[in-house]
Length: 542
Image 1: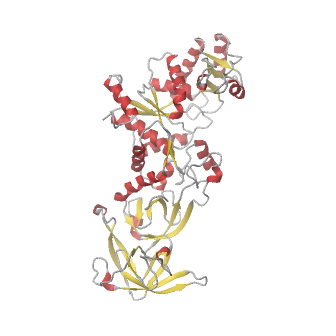
Image 2 (image 1 turned 90 degrees about the horizontal axis):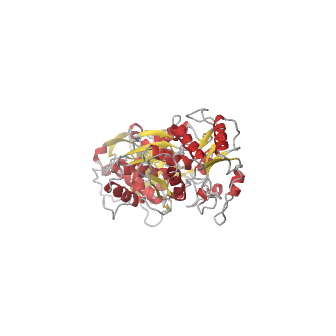
Image 3 (image 1 turned 45 degrees about the horizontal axis):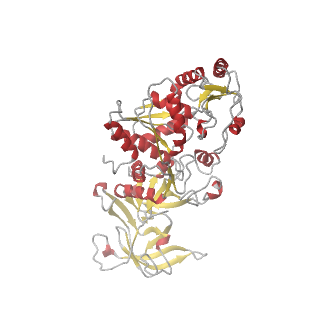
């Protein structure tokens, strides 16, 4: 690769390779905590960690940071594996921080023996208040000078389960006056009497992430520990731990910007609230930024990979416009999705001079012959879109209006002769004339209608439910403070639509509804009419 065109992480890898510093090759890891579903922000990290390893012939561990049994579950473990595989990546092995609990504990004991860690009996609030501020140093814990023997005894009794939650913690003995708050005697173990999803009740003390992370990286011989920018201030602690334990491998930690995306929230705490308070239908609600939600919405994994490649790897956090993701989705589906006709808001049209029925023919994609063709039932009664008719059409109107003509896609030219309204004055039916010599591909009529509209046969058409998903939030940058107020309570519209029958038996999951947008079959629908979820519109934005 050319160092002038590649990002700083790949430049670092190439430098290390050139200096023969990577005896075991490029080894990365993706280390999510299994306390929620992955979202599109994680996709950036997945594509980076797995991507650079693939590019340089290396391997990637999928490692679960399962150090807090109170918030973690096997449901989330399984969903993470499913999402990583769906994105198209294969891990070297699945590992867990809990695989190394005994080793991590032994390292903590050794630090206590070396006088570099101690047991503190302050409660969490006292620890916070004595930590100091960005401008004021912290205060030493009154328990900081316990003897090595007393600390070992307490630590071993903590492990044995003698003490309740919150009564003691293990802390590193570094510097309470450090300008970096993370170095002010950080907590490395706390008591949690909770059943772990993998280790059961074998442990009642659990290591903190900052202590665990570097040790796991070293054990697995990770060549480059790639983290998001919020961990930059934690890097001195990462290095301190590895420099002060008996381990002969020390990976470099390299930080990159996290992904921010308009009209979404990425905080797991807020995503949990959306699910727990039933503000969405679940983690896979198509309005959620989760990979499960995007998948159910019909977004191809390849579009997400393309999106992550386009935004690149930088050292500055920024918020990406939703239109870029929409563009990547459209670009992916443009060539591959078959195109069918679905009327979202049906208006009945009766062709007064047409008799019988016939089967017409149309391509699944006008520019992609490999997708084949399908049959289109046609009779004297069809449906068109309500929006394709106007009593008083605006200037440059190219659809149907009284006395005007349009072509029905792959069918005939029709003219609106009569409008039937209900008691409230709403148009409920159009009576039209069809021109027999205007059949698509065989037109000898000489007529020149201004526009083309899609349609579905009223008898053969299949009733479907279309879920039109908009943006979950009304503002581009929803705030955690105004989180509930920012939610668009009208972000989902359910439409009772009619689809051409050939779509029901097609093996494809994603379709372009002609003139409407891209939609996908909802795998979650079992009872009632088939359900299609809107993926993205045909135009920029929603």
